[in-house]
Length: 385
Ligand SMILES: Cc1ncc(COP(=O)(O)O)c(C=O)c1O
Image (cartoon, rainbow, N blue to C red; front, side, top):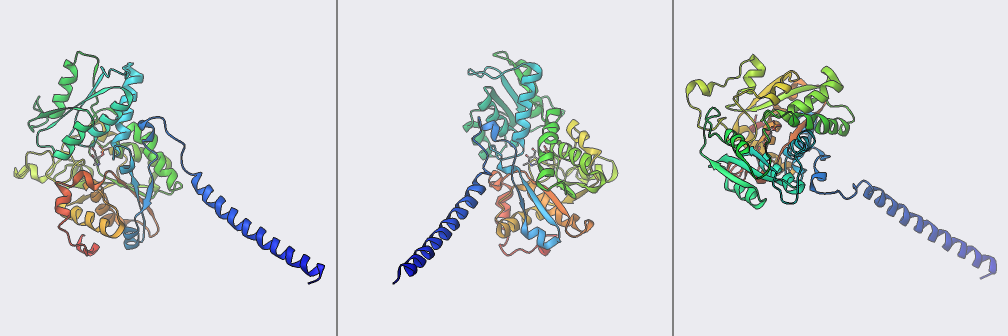
């Protein structure tokens, strides 16, 4: 081999090496680039609240010709959208009333709730230096009681009663706060407290808008306190006006549907006297109500329509989403998903529709999911609505 040929081979080998090295570095940079999307470490659990991901639900999108997105509030550290509310209530009492957290946790937050808000308050109180006292009906599921106790909350079980009874759990929480003397007691009062809807106006709404590049054509969720609906719908209407449809998904037994459709807060079970002693005659926890609250009043002017969903439909779709999308969701999310199917024909194909995925199925194992487990794995959407 001549010196010129040797030189040629050498040059060729070098270029192959350079090419391979470039491919390797390009691959590495690509992966490093995706890693740069990770957010930096947070300062305390409360800083993990919000900025939740959004996922396109493939099965419902294919079936409706829409893009159906779920805002994954179940990804909050306390497992639901109520983390945002708990944090904002505590920050507001701290900034407006000067009631601070401390190492001895002598200042105490009181709430009456059998739902996710208690868990979210317990987490935020622990992280911010308050003690937490939760009043709830004595038939609240064992998993919720265990979770609250594990989180160190003081649990006050009361007999189920109507809202006009002073021993009803919300009223019990208010009087416990008033009689607390070891520090300052504050009543969180999520139904009437404006820190509730405001946190969704300031965070959840803008996040949804940003995640969909502003193209939000419809938003569907249920109302418990109405805080999520009020904050998100107000933000979206301010940004999109009539280009966004706001739809309230309501479980059976709740009065919101008739209030939106006919202006009357009423469900026929009230008349027939068939209502069980629970406020709303449904298996679904967290949404549905038969009284008007301040947070709902803040929502009402933005709501365009309402869709009624039965427990049976919700139970079936919960199983469908689990088996077909790998989404294991709670009852209120299932209600929202059924409402999408029922509302879809009102929207042009290709529209973006967003629902709230409020919490995980694991919060509902002993009640709602006990029924959903029985649904056939091969259930079709045609069998649901
Ligand atoms: C599981 C679940 N979904 C939905 C809601 C309704 O949210 P909002 O109170 O903002 O109406 C709640 C409220 O407690 C809830 O616990």
